[in-house]
Length: 422
Ligand SMILES: Cc1cc2nc3c(=O)[nH]c(=O)nc-3n(C[C@H](O)[C@H](O)[C@H](O)COP(=O)(O)OP(=O)(O)OC[C@H]3O[C@@H](n4cnc5c(N)ncnc54)[C@H](O)[C@@H]3O)c2cc1C
Image (cartoon, rainbow, N blue to C red):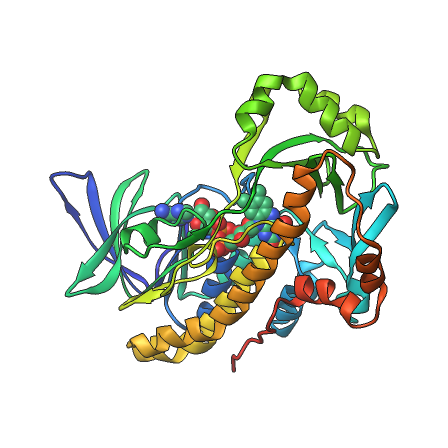
């Protein structure tokens, strides 16, 4: 583990209730080493802000993650001079998003039509992306990464958040910071500790999540199927397919009662490319149930504290845009907060400015996701017929400009952001 420079470990004292209490002083304490927290840390570190990134897990390898790097993120990497090296990581490229229907495959997004430089979504295991970003941040002596550091408490004094307390294998440590950023994802502990209650909507679906083996001759990227009461997404993880089987919200107990053989048959009937492969699903223990959520906190900040990414707005997986949005939040946060952090004083107005720039694009994408969930996915889940896309929608998808909108929104989000660094 690296030693601290600007972020200083200043003392270590015994505490009655806990084993050891160490203490760290830093400029920005970022909680959560997902895409949002990692990018924010890198951007602040590059600007000379002392930054400490706390990640609860010992590594970045996690199952419940998307593996998509969208064109907007590739452009941001390009602005940092990192795109070329990032693209050297083993990856596949997704040039179109296509769903299989009884009328044949229908392309809902063609990224070649909306981006000249990066006309694809880069599919790379998220763990590799996060390692790449944090390794880059480690080049700066004012960056400190602490893995296995699970934040449990906020330090609040006179109504201002002054940092956090985390627990690691060697005991408890206190991190005092000018600003604390909660980038700790959909079940954000920071959000709960700060009593920032999100407004939730209830997407009509849950997802069964498991892996089956992938063969070298299989297609690359993402495969999608919708119809006959279910949806299926397969994400290419090189040696495996990560399978997401979309079911009606709350229907897991019924599916389980019907038995594994029934589930296998249903999946095989959708997974027309290689129906036999589902035989590798042999035990319910292989299956995780993901409750799909969508929510947004009305105010993303408190004095001394900011939420970004899923901590501020849990994204439904529809359209696979959550990573994009978390990273765009991080870029805006770095743009707005670098100077105040360097000056050692971050005001409520500074924090409100981050929310002002990011709230509208977030509201728009969550509204679009809700429409997709209600009009397409819920309709497909309720019907026991294969999905038929109306002819006028098929026509619109082929039309110039209007037909490009889904690809544009998936590739770039609702509002493009740029890195504002000297
Ligand atoms: C099954 C699934 C599939 C998805 N597929 C896609 C996709 O294909 N494309 C896409 O763009 N989005 C996808 N998403 C959404 C996407 O993963 C999220 O929107 C995105 O990861 C949010 O990034 P984040 O940095 O805000 O949070 P996260 O990626 O959730 O990162 C939060 C980090 O905080 C850490 N943490 C949590 N609590 C603490 C604590 N107390 N102390 C310290 N650290 C803590 C966690 O370990 C984690 O590493 C998917 C989501 C799910 C659940």
